[in-house]
Image 1 (cartoon, rainbow, N blue to C red):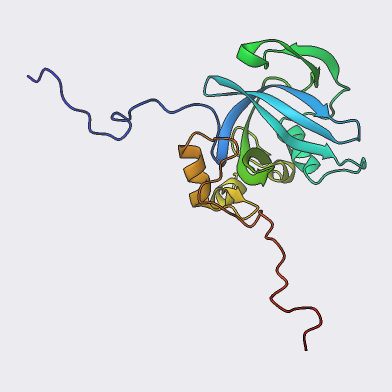
Image 2 (spheres, rainbow, N blue to C red):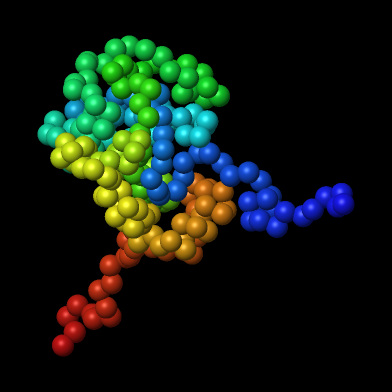
Length: 222
């Protein structure tokens, strides 16, 4: 009888357990614990989500922009509407003043809470978007749709579909987005190096403006 038998599966030999913080593009089963508003004086309004993913509480910031700075409806408002349909919510009341443990080290923070959106189990389609701002790589988690717990989209629910089909198609298109000349290789190197601010592996990108060149022609020359 063996004293100890080696487990040669990939999961068993990992150096450390995988983090439950969502940081990859994909479709995730989440519980929306709370939703709250953030915005700016110019009129842009965003819905953020305090969620639970596999026991890890975290915040999805800046995801659903309902209005643009001019007050017009942003295209992402349709995803918020999808959430209401898959959660079977008819309307959301005005925000109320509340506190959530979303500050540093779990400190309580004042928020404009949408109390109708709490304890909602669903699936979220999320895309990681990378760009450059003020010389540093930025990383955003962008929501691109919701499904109910069975995988039905809002459209399938309203049509009375017998089985969810769109979610399988969507899985092929849930991929990282690279802007400002970034590439997958550059971003992977940045992540491996600890996501350091002000560092862009590989040097220049399309986001850096080249100095204008006027050639060697001399004024007055024939």
